[in-house]
Length: 203
Image 1 (cartoon, rainbow, N blue to C red):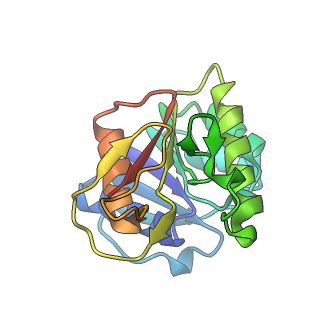
Image 2: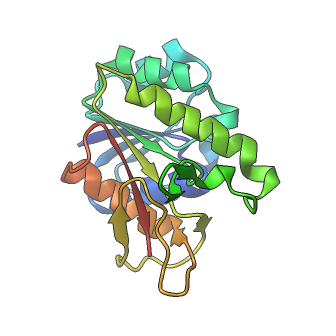
């Protein structure tokens, strides 16, 4: 498939780009500084600005799938969604946050007392992004939330998927590596299972 990844030089975006390259997809890897994108088979580093809706729509046009892997506070949800709509991509996948996941019925992680203050604004912006997508009538979107800790680490291929509830392992730790998250996202592209839904990945 032809897949465009915005934010391809970031920690999640670079692993997603690597995973899609590994699987033989043609990837347009978009970043403000494309020279930071690793040289990989089938990957075309491309300069782009996620705050430029018209410019991004042009870069995304002609792709089967567009992926947003950008910080919520460094972007504009309405412009990103608008660019995906204007580009008429077949699918739009968003690297989501964990803050909007539930830790109890109706209780979002971001609202709990021990949620780190320095991440709260980003998490709230991610939750607002998801709310906008849920109102979207044209796009075939998926919002993929990582677990509470989104970290560097090995690619194991062993993880669980969930829906709106935070996942945690047997020790109560909620985490996923960028590499394993990238597998889950690439799997969703190749075998769509969550159209117009949020889902989550964790150990």
